[in-house]
Amino acid sequence: MTHSPRPSAQASLPLLVAVTMTGTVALHIFVPALAAAAADLGTTPVAAQLTITLYLVGLACGQLVYGPVSDRFGRRPVLIAGLSLYLAGLLLAIPATSIEVLIVARVLQSLGACGSLVLGRAMVRDVSTPTDAARKIAILTMAMTLTPALAPAIGGLVAGAFGWRAVFVVLATVVAGLAALVVRTLPETNRHPVALPGIGAVAGGYLRLLRNPAYRAYMLAGACAGTSLYAFLAVAPFLLVDRLGRSSQEVGLDCLIVVAGMVVGSGIAGRLAGRMPIRRAARIGNGICLAAALALLAIDRSGALTVTTLLAPLVLYAVGIGLLGPNAVAGLMNVDPHAAGSASSLYGFMQMALGALFTLAVATWHDGSAMPVAVTLLAASTIAALALRRV
Image 1: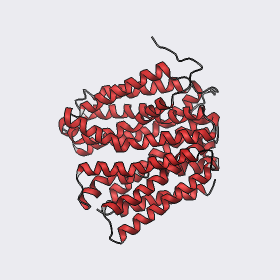
Image 2: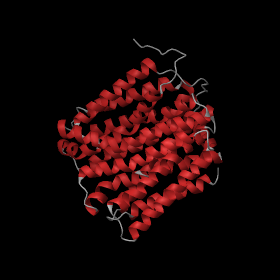
Image 3: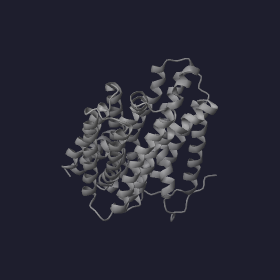
Image 4: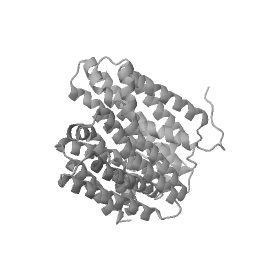
């Protein structure tokens, strides 16, 4: 029997944070188990890599649907539907006997999980003032930032102890628990549903958002900030182990140190909410990113690259991201509060698309130096700086 939450209940921020984090955890937690899954299923590394690539594609494209649908039918039922699809994909992956079944399962996971990303942001905006939204989105960003650092370590431990299928067992248990909490306790936050438009109208709604200079600027700046650090995380094992002689265990610690910078920046963003205009805070954060990317490039070209000189500018860059990202998201979500779902969807699509592009760029260009990472981060922060000039 389904228990509906009391109408007067308040949306739990910790629950929204947990739900939002699950949106990308399935992407990162499976990476350490990829080789074992490929060997067990008798497939090639290239085919196995599709379970990651197509997850990213599904994560990007699926977000375009959840926003408009939740603007019409409400956040709560759409979130429940997304978590159910996510869980179905996880349960399908556990007994998979071929790479084809596993790929289908991964696509289902991504199409369900991306709803958590969109609706977490939208529900925060529904129940918050513009100033309070910046503070709460900073908390969401801080939590999501921990995912790519913590999830691979957890996945490696689980897969090493119990096999690659156990990764999906653990994740299915977590998602099922969160879904039950959502059903029992999470209230509806969309108090002003709008009519569900056709495909042409949905596209028109996205175009209207893109024509808004403020939305466009904050979207580009936030998307660049949100996923540009993937450029480092994608090549961190090769750069730190092959070039700088770190062990696999030390690489995980190094990534955590970098991610800690983003947590600090997000904390600063939360403290500044209401004390400083969103635009100014975003520009300061991006300025920090630019300075850090230039410093990393200079260090690499001077031949002074060490573990310390690599991590120091990356931590600084992460602090800038932590300050820029939440303010950019708060800015774009305030453009049209009645279309918060669509605004979140379009932003999520752009964020994941750019993340895939940044990751592909460094993976293709990787030459053992830090230059591909530095140039990618510099390009991302330059795009963000040019975008923010339009606000």
